[in-house]
Length: 185
Image (cartoon, rainbow, N blue to C red; front, top):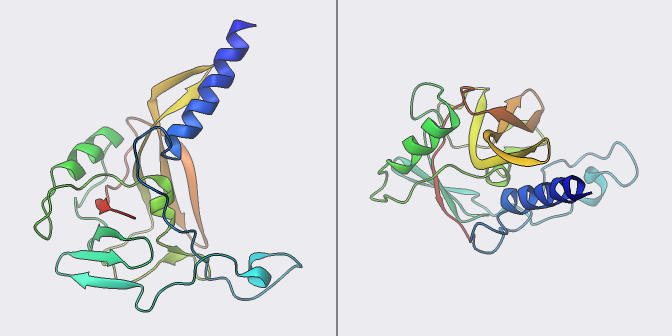
């Protein structure tokens, strides 16, 4: 009985950590529209087009940085700034050491922040970023429930390919790209 309760608690805690509830994060950014405008079935996103409309312009270029006018996040303009894939912990250390645009408070994005860059009408990362390969991007969301316990051996990543952006767990030694972000509303 105790093991079952511990497993449920681990799942709840991992969800809270993943969604920033326990991390001391600020208020959530607005839920954006996906960009899908054609309806294929009653009740799909093309019919409802729910969410906050993208502002015009969506992004503001500032040297080596891009500010997302929808979320308030500032991103490195170069999506592959490190030039190579690395483990999740290496990606975190890499982002934390960055100094871009006169700012030193860079970090790995969480999975929702990564997904906010995807234009789901085309399945690609929205412009004006450069050097954006189809790849797996590391997030700062570490800790997944494994056999009823939180394990720091895994963390969440976002894979981009074709018309989707998939959030999935990955092992701590797997190699991903680090895309620094800072700020947010």
